[in-house]
Image (tube, rainbow, N blue to C red; front, side):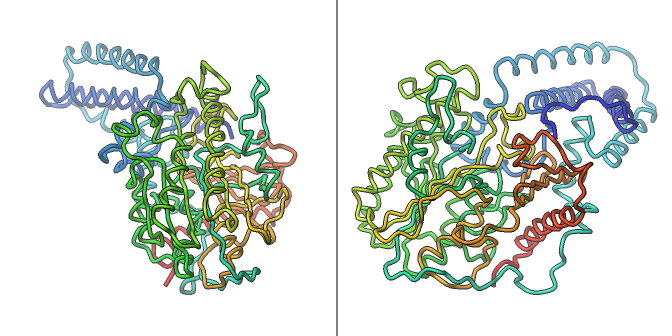
Length: 582
């Protein structure tokens, strides 16, 4: 599984794809030039064609992947929501630098003048270019799993998304439900609790697990405070975010379900009948509150989903980055230390009665990581690249985390709380030459830390390191286990205090969709578009450089991996059909 642009391998399909891709581009231009239309129509059509190829081509060059239609489909509403456009530009700037914009303009101008010269020539319309266009597109779309042509690749991703094309793999391995509500089961807590503890989820933005207990070249630890917490609680060395974005991770962590393959859960499934963790806790006497450091409570439809599915309150601790908070606001919101202080002040001002379930979503380490104030750059005073920007952002975020525990100790909740400190998701930092979270399905896309700290006198959480693989779908059952609630649930994961799950399921929804299934030490990856398979041994090959698929001998385990991917599709169908809960 390579993240760089693939080398040309001179196979028949590669040669044919290249030839047909060139034919498609040439015949498209020729078809437009031969249209019996006004020159301005031809100019606009050709300009759009040139711009599309230039933008898609440079995107591919910078990210090593084709542009996926799902990226637009999932983020379209967020881009145009008031106040969100500037944040979308930050994401674009994290991919393209000034030099890339210059190259795009230069490439566009070169193509423009070539087309302008061609427009001056006389062209008579024939069906030849139209037939070549159609034949090339049909070949690339139908017979090549990964078209080398940008337009065809984008069109193919759109067709898979819009038409919900079912692959042969799905037909064979996706279960067909033969019973109603197959996800519902009885959950029994193993802990008898007299006084229910307060529970806090701290989702620390974009934490790559490789950075914990690691040092920068100058000898500084990236996360000294989190490293100290490891020694005080239960640390999961191999903990996985179920997917690669905040909303998807919140969904898995709060609802105990594998995230969606297509579409954002908080938007697409807001009206589904669910029984997520905050709903269960609310029914059992908890006051539930979801707070975020970003000032847009409606981003990704978070407010509507969370308040509909169990949170008494969903709020932001920001008071306006252009107004009152402008001096403490950078990146995507207020800095995390102020966020923690305001969260506890909100609890105090609300005279909230115990027990409380609080979910906190931080923001200071959000991409593109390059807005850390100069006086808070603890590792690199003058960062020069994405890795150095990220190192500074993670380090200051770790420093801010101290504030949560300072405020907790001063609060009425100090002696009766359990705190989950975790990354909402990971983020690649140059592993496999990749710096984009929407690319491929390596460990750095998914693995993030989890530390559970028990502040009660009679502790249930031991101080230990856990080496087995777990994931975010295990969190809801863990909380119910710790607070002594037994009830019916639809959670796919069991408690983190019990035996490790037989499989961990991960979803990369972009770049053609990748599915990962982990049965440690083995990791199976399926590229849905081409049905190409990968198997890695994470113990002997933690960098995932050697694909064992061609030499794989254990057919039973391979088949079990395939059936587990089928379960991911099955769970998506349950959400789509609204068959998760009563």
